[in-house]
Image (cartoon, rainbow, N blue to C red; front, side, top):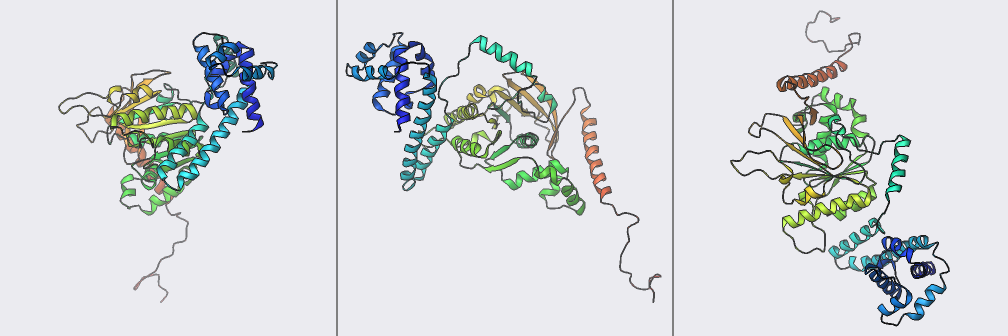
Length: 458
């Protein structure tokens, strides 16, 4: 232990003993783990317990609570602490040096465990990651401070860094900030991945995004990206049936294909702790998880059933966002209604856990209104939960599967006409691409003349 760490612990405890007004703020700032020296940790425990009981922890009462053996130590703490003016500065030093101490301890444990058990080593690695994310204490602000901060924010005229979705109707209604937890739920084949990928690409134009996939692979995901950005038929891409004009169209949008700051991460077998560690090292502003029910339970945890596992994962994802300031967009399966029953999904429909509904800041539900018509590409995107805005709002969206693109269906618009309009638009784009690749009429034409052609010189 360094002299600085020891001095910080002494001054914090001395301040609490000579100035009871500092006890509340310091208890919110520090925990017992911030006191490396065992006897000082015991004193902190005693002061915290007495304070919780509504008793003023003067030296005599604290000594009595500790069995009467700490009189000289308590007197020494008060003697070397002439003032409590710097108590919070010493608290910051106390927390930082304790983190360094615990990190060194965990590093030694990790080196030892790595030689014998990979699972044990991973558990220790998760603890190291959590050590960097933990908050030292509660943030407390009174109403005057909130009022002044409110005026400052609005006087500056700067909007908070809300994430935009590339869908104006959503941008007008939901306000997702760094650290928020958003869930996109849908039945299989509803288009969850296509919509999440479209949103991720839009956000990645200005922010760094990590797309953590559990079932797909980077090749399949990039096939979708190519179809979405180039408007080249997804079917042709999957069938390896691309023509020269298709390649030229893809090359013409190369910049939009490679410039977004988006990374695909193979997350198979990962826990939330693994995702958090990679997200921090990758410095992502947004993490997309495709999808929630596939995430492994944390290592070293007791055996769980699926409901318990998904409940824990949902809570861990919310905590991950709040602790790191990284926004999380998690895809989730929805439970289908019982056979013979027809009902639209609601917040109760999230598969395997109601905790998802509780944890999410924003919950979106994507579904076909007519599940019996697989050719109907119109989807309903319902804002099921929205802590900061309108909820229970449904938007009609058209999914063009051949270009992996969602677009808004305007209310009152004829669905069939809209479908034809979208198809016409993409056909027009194809004609433009072919026109760009058409031969210049003034270009010299070179070809082989065969037989007794009239232009042959002999």
